[in-house]
Length: 294
Length: 280
Ligand SMILES: Nc1ncnc2c1ncn2[C@@H]1O[C@H](COP(=O)(O)OP(=O)(O)OP(=O)(O)O)[C@@H](O)[C@H]1O
Ligand SMILES: [Mg+2]
Image (cartoon, rainbow over all chains, first blue to last red; front, side):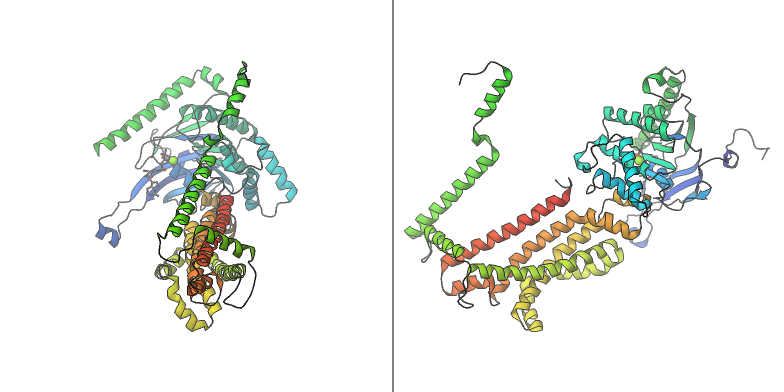
């Protein structure tokens, strides 16, 4: 392998021995409709290659953001990592073992919170904890619930139902639920996408604070450049689909703990931001151009 | 009272002087009472002046009759002269047995059909075929098979109140929000736990609204069925028709309506109770 040219990316070389999550040549093809019935009704659809040749190694205790134009396949990738969506090409290894399905080693935070409306805040957490460990003692369980409700600042709202909470509070419950099962890794799909700017800012600060405490591996999808810069160690930028790939991975050098005022003073901040902006602008414009062109 | 010059005082006075008829509920109630009064007046005058067919009782006669029936609900002078309370209880009992039996079949079956696409496809033809049949079409068959009017009544309630619950339960279970199922999956919940803790509670609003529709149908059907059976409110009406006692028929109609209303509001309250901010 030593004769390989310097600039070709060979996934075998970039494989790291310490990676917690290894995404290797992963592709996702949504099968089309080509059966006889579809042909007769003229509703055939070709196979759709959403993402292709994705290679990514994620070290333990890193915060990774994925950013890319809308519809490029970020959710698709995250759902494959979560085990909710089958992998149609390549493999994803978690601690060296291929992912075959969902599991409580990966905690998931959903964009629309996905709280059970008939359960109170506490019951939502309890459902998670008891599902993952059915034989947990009541004492231990209650301690975990209390700790996590406290962690996200929801003490006093334990007995409320989700519809009595604001969007920001609901997502706090979503985060607490994902953390309460003590996963190795947190997966978040646009966790603050449905929130107003101010609430979003508060929750970003909370995530930064919680991350400093726990330092779990996090993979977060976001559309916000500032959010990615504030929270991440690495930012994965994806190209537009179909057959979206990883365009570039940025390392974010800001020291921790961070807050939004101090990172803006950092010499690298504006260059990173400009680079992300131009990437997103270029890809999004290409998407729009393709759409207009038919 | 002189207007106070301090703002809070002013606000308070303003609120106090807001006339009660600005309240929507007050206005609705007033309109209701007004229309009811006009209707009764029209009825009374019309009956007295002979605007309707011969033998239509006046409103006052009917109300008196109504008062007599509700103050003497429980007397028993044989099957053709039974207090309205007894008749009501007889009808309610039939509805209760048939309806509860139907629900006990429809809810579990609906859950099974809802979670299994194979069962859904297998059972859907039955449901689609049997659902549109008028409940009364079952009456001769019931009488022939069961050879008992009481059992036939219950059978008809059963067969007619099973479908809305079954269909709504199936729909609710088959259309549980994918997010809830994803949560359950990522936690590694077993199939049974997912059904019990996620799918059933998520489908509960649909199940309850199915139960509500079924209850309405059961109450509709029992009166019709009882006209051909022996006792109950339906038979009471039929009997009074044979006696040509129009006020008693009106009394029974009113009581049937009122009971239906009460049953429905019971289920409306239950629907609210299980909604938790959904569909409201
Ligand atoms: N079940 C499916 N069947 C067919 N195509 C699908 C399916 N799910 C997603 N896609 C397609 O795959 C592509 C990627 O979708 P995905 O939801 O992963 O994008 P995304 O990057 O998360 O977008 P957004 O930023 O809007 O959330 C889209 O073009 C979408 O239309
Ligand atoms: Mg998405």
